[in-house]
Length: 274
Image (cartoon, rainbow, N blue to C red; front, side):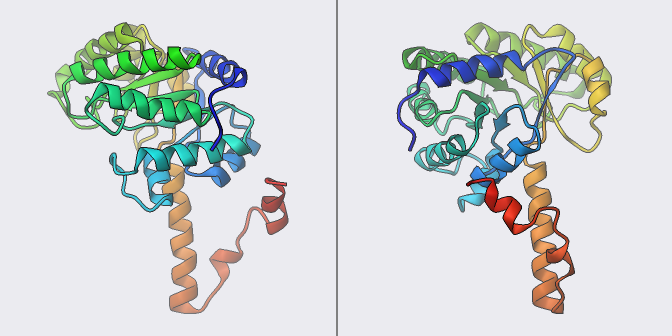
């Protein structure tokens, strides 16, 4: 694993923070392993962020705080080794309800070369995420890295409050997370343009949204004031779907069409790591 954070980590952290601009959103094609991260970098990704689901599946675990933190840190180190852009990590809920343990887990991500994290409230009280963010911020300061903490609230994703209260609740939680030291507010599940506009305008933090079926186009989201748009597990799921189709076609039908429809040949892919 990559050793303790370096001056390069601090530089990457600053560069990642500068990419979060209201009205000029950074597009995040979430990676699930070193191979996908390197591929996305060659596609022009200005930064890499992981998908918790895709990374967990690639390591043989279900999504939902099931992957051991040490396994996650190993995966982060592998990604950092092959890319030159900043790497942020979906740390889910931090893999513990104890803020001190969460801070230790995040420190392992920092030591692996990660310069940003997502940390979520889920269905728990926002008080818990406040405590986690405070502990994470202290751990990052000790490491000497200005870690980008993207606080995720699941108000929309989990339907935590009635629909008419969702904007206000998201903003209230975002304000508390900002006070605790968060750098960004991630509101997955919100797709209504006016709700997005209200949250982006009302938050002191740059707002991140997740690609879902009804999400407006990138240009519209920029006009609404969004600063970050994440693919989430979408690309990993798309890749798995193509792999499944190719395998079924081969195993069940004895045909090769899907596997031979390649946008990148062996030599091109192998050269990514040369």
